[in-house]
Length: 474
Image (tube, rainbow, N blue to C red; front, side):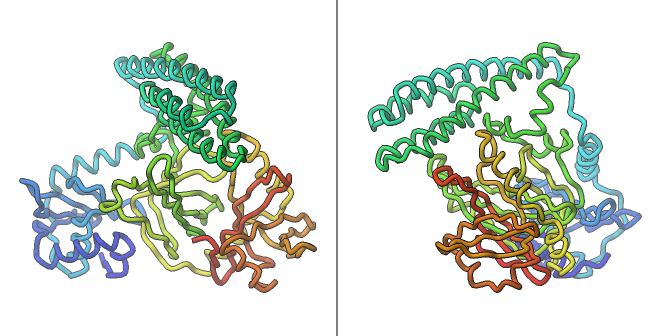
């Protein structure tokens, strides 16, 4: 097995690379071993714990090795796995020896998870009973939230001054007793928007948030009642709520935090994916006290445009640094896709980087939508649904560019259907591009529905040609 320095750098983070190299150089990895078929490599590594950590690399089943370690680190791959790779790259001797019991158990658990993927586990009677109690509490909380929203609507958003906001905040705080943190956060956001509206006298965003909460409570009550029906039918489990659980973000909107094994269990996973990033930025969420590092990606297998998000609480700014943008293509073993709409959220652990090739870029261009009328219709449907992402992202194949009498720019498809562009900030640089740099290529846009002007606008994020990705949003 030949391991290059380039491969290690593409497989582990920069910090894990350096720490792993140090461990390998100082001989901290001992008992270097491999399986008889040469597909599994493993070692012990001295750490801060009483016992050595056991780490391994499995090259047997996928194009990218899977890895594991018995250390408690949240960094995957960890520095011990990185050290193992450095030992291989240095040409150290790995003897064919029996695989340690810890590694066998860890691999068995991982293999079992892969085997069980897409088959939801049956809850035990105790688990079903606990889930039922939680659902009943959620339903009570949703009733409380509905009454609170009605009181706000009856009083009017304009009545929420500093005193009223403080009183409402206390009521919102009580929603924390009912397992609906997502709805509780939406009320916090509504109060923050109302405070801004009181100063500006523009209540558009506050009204939108009110409509969102109203629709969310209605949908959540329906969903939770379906779950209660399923749990009361235990052990028959008719799975009335399963479709909404797997195809819509309702659980996350209520406030559930998905774990990767659960997504795996529900079959919400793509394997052996190759992806490229076309945009990246940082969102400041003052209401919830965090930064959100968001990447926009395109799958090279089917053109799916999806998002990755890393959440960084303000209070953890010293221990948790920001995510980095990447200009490499990533090969991903297991890509977990959260339930959602047009641009779902995704996450992965193991990946290998490589240079973006012309063939990759040609795929991205080929996947771009050629019917702007249909794309506009889909974007408007998203914008009008109070529970959907208001600013969906589409990739458009540009056939023409035109400038209006007031300086507005639009791109057209081959039938002349036009989408007006929102050229703010760095997006203004699109005007510097030549017609040949745009026509025939893919324009990745985030759509906005300007209600006041009754127009759909596309904010350019990137232009993708067979030669390069030109980003406006990063």
